[in-house]
Amino acid sequence: MSAPTVLITGTSTGIGLETAVGAARAGWRTVATMRDVSRADALRRAADAAGVGDLLDVRRLDVTDQASVAACVADVVDAHGRLDAVVNNAGAGHVGTLEQETVDDVRAVMEVNFFGVLHVSRAALPHLRATRGRLVTVSSVGGVVGQPFNEAYCAAKFAVEGFMESLAPLAATVGVTVTVVEPGAVASEFVTNVGIDRDAAITAAGPYGPALRAYLERSAGAFAAAQSPADAAAAVVATLTDPDPAPRVQTSTTARQFVGMKLGDLDGRAVTATTAGWLA
View 1 (cartoon, helix red, strand yellow):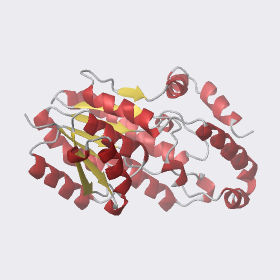
View 2 (tube, helix red, strand yellow; view 1 turned 30 degrees about the horizontal axis):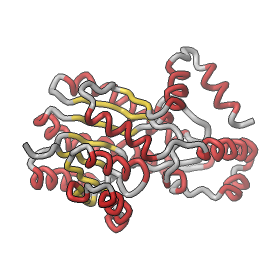
View 3 (cartoon, helix red, strand yellow; view 1 turned 180 degrees about the horizontal axis):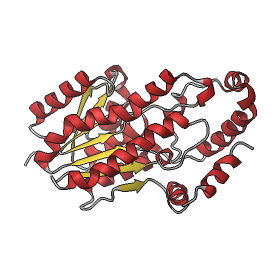
View 4 (cartoon, one colour; view 1 turned 90 degrees about the vertical axis):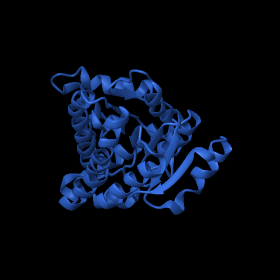
């Protein structure tokens, strides 16, 4: 039999890059996609260093463009004859608060982090049904615990979690396994790509300035002790090879403890007391 084929989005850096290399190491024909394929050099170098460059197929895919998604998925099936798994990894961070951003800003966050997942999943599902495959989505602990100055990002990830939790039992009736993977803080370019100018943002925040300063200082400490992209990616790859993967997977002990606080907090007081402490 030919190697099983996995399509992974957002593979130019971070968790996506490491997942692509890890999946290839595990024997998967790995279709590594990204919006700008000129950024694929680091991925190709990592795959070659791991001795799996021959299992890597780099393709362009913009998750916010339905035509791009449909064309890529169709071309992958034409080229490899099958699609056994999808890892929805592409996403973008966002820091802001409702009073100081537009609704269009929030919509843009949703387009990448929620609707992008839906575009790829919808295009892939007929092929995953044919192979009794796996649909894996990289969410976040922010998809379980709402966090100050992350309203739009958490809203998108909450939506992903609700969608996939609802889809999972239905997909199982046609042989498709659905899993969400929840990293906590990960030391990758994801944070850099948020593009926030700390001092300018605090000045512009007006009455929210003191809270934003405290939040950014707390975040800097959290990301200084962050999990490596390779460690987080190992949890993603494990969902591809586990004979019975859980519907929800955390990538570290810290992430499990954080998510566990929410899942055991029926009235919400423990969560809001914790996150309020970030702003003091």
